[in-house]
Length: 79
Image 1: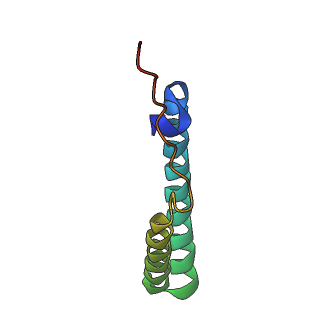
Image 2 (image 1 turned 45 degrees about the vertical axis):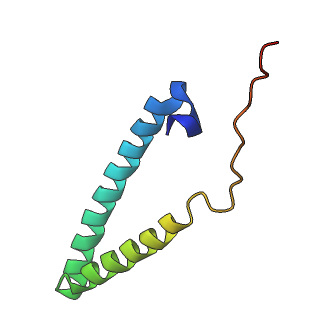
């Protein structure tokens, strides 16, 4: 990750990943509870969760696709 965002920003990126993970978990728990109250069962919540996981798995396959790889800089040989 440090190669993407830089060494000086790695800590901030990890912090944002943690925040997003916590907010997503809280939202999923809230939505699951609301669906249980609305439908009387957790079946719909599990189906929605499974569909979101499949969507996330498909999205991961496209991470970095279409990105051109940078060629490493070659230092000239000393004369």
